[in-house]
Length: 413
Image (cartoon, rainbow, N blue to C red; front, side, top):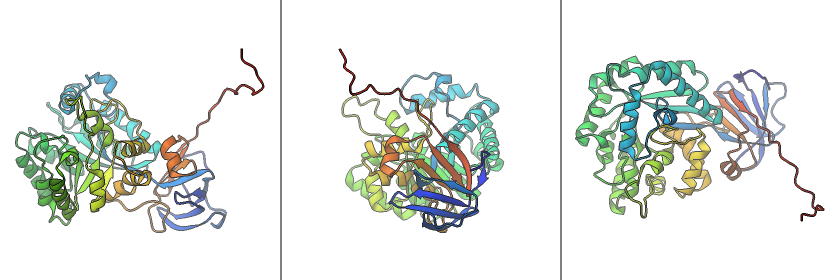
């Protein structure tokens, strides 16, 4: 293995698969061509020896806020709910520059990459004041700097008080998708119409923060029915916490609309478990969307981490296994289902090609030291290798020095 990254890999040798077995994976550029028993791949090509490592499809982050990340200690916000977090970040953002936003966003994106995330969709705030596109300029810069190391897609995010012209300018500069949070608008149905109309006029896909609340009238039905006829653009709904508290009959009908529209749903357990339920100290509800009903209905479903160390979530390790752990413990998913939502499910919502150890798949991998998926989900072992499009882009090797245990023959008094 070369000491210089990135470098092209031709063979992943002696890799353990989640379903069992040890294999060699042969790559041709960005694509997997063969998966054969260990030792059967041709020798002599650029190899990465994965003895003792579990080979997984790389993770993807379908809903990030790179421009907000790492501001908790700078903003020093009070702990609180969604509205408080919005107000606190809005006040803090007035102090931001393009350079400060880019520095934090870059650090967070690279941290995610080192943990095994090779594709990120990040929302970027259209800020208040006379320079509303500071965050946009910063993340466009970071996207260019990281090109070839990971895929970074940007979503313009603002409230109902932001002029449509500001959204349009962000899209002209190179932001990929239309975003927003209609459920927080003074007139939610009108805001859904405005944002989807903008997406239709500009030919863009859309990714909306949707029903990030435990009660109230959901907007997702209007959203799903409006995009059901789209053929060239895609639609994604993030959060969807209200689905987790809808009565069963209404939930079933709503999910039918979601599936009919092929609307991607993104669960965000870390942030929503933090933000939701502050006003309910007894029997506090889980801030999660309806994971099991969505899975059973065959919805296009993903999970992500959302905020990292900002007013919306003071913690976060940029690690997909953190999201997996919460999906298992709070969402009651099986471990393989949970990892599927941060990998294959996330790529499906982002409309990226399938990745992993399958012939024809994109060569995006996360190799973690360990022997099984339950083991690495539990330990989140830091020893990892990350490949993006057939190139090794990150490697982490850790060692532990441990004091020797006392001898069994030693007598303590």
